[in-house]
Image (cartoon, rainbow, N blue to C red; front, top):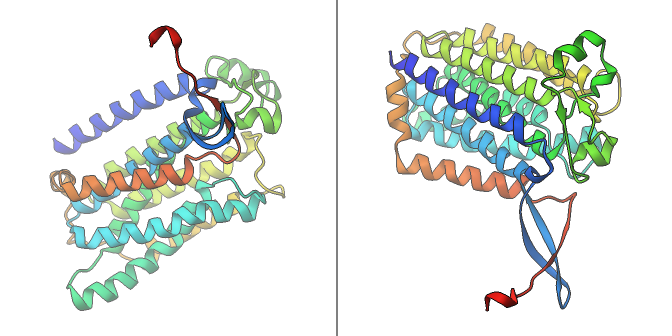
Length: 350
């Protein structure tokens, strides 16, 4: 019963968030969250730094993903002394990789890629677990179970990217092709759900001039598919099917990653098959390899109430807040948009 209540609550919350995001975020006013004065240009004018909703939703995505991973591995019995250094190490690889890989593939210094970050996380996490087990096993007697952690990581990634696509909608990046490019039957099917972005500072406007046009809502489709994959993964995980949860989540998300680029209009690097698509294919192969090498641990019992109780801890709450604040500062300060600010006194209110 606890599993069912958790799944229903999670699905309702995500449905409300995504529905609101799909409806509101293409609008111009949902790109810039705040502007802070940075440098004085004249006696009355300041240069401002834009803080974006892109950063806010990225922070929410990372925080939710980290929280989901803590919840799931705690449900499998992993104590805080096990998951804390693990998540710190994973974030220490994935967050820089999101910018570094995008810079290599797209040749742009001010962009991020979740595909690159997830690929790095998938490849390096088994190595991180082995190194931590070697160190903590000798000194603290703690062993991190690999497959439950890998399954939890895959689920956390699916939810994180599902929510993170709201950041893309807000900033107008990762956008779909114009609806007019598709066959008539697709146009009829998607006309009610298409996105129309407004605002000249959105990427879809300055990169392709597609603001004001009906485009395929590819970010929304990705959000729905990834969150559904995460829900299926949680269901399998909670009933002890770790291999199935891991393979299901990785396969669904990465197959869609390969497929979705057919419908996207933004620049994805050179070549008919992009580097990100190759990363997705390799991720699926790596997932099947891990399942073949690492067996399920039959002694692992999954108890959702243990995970929920572990979340109600001041250390966990502060840790998640720190992740959110750090990601917002890292991704939320816009380097491709600017602002000029004028401050004045309202004379009739003195």
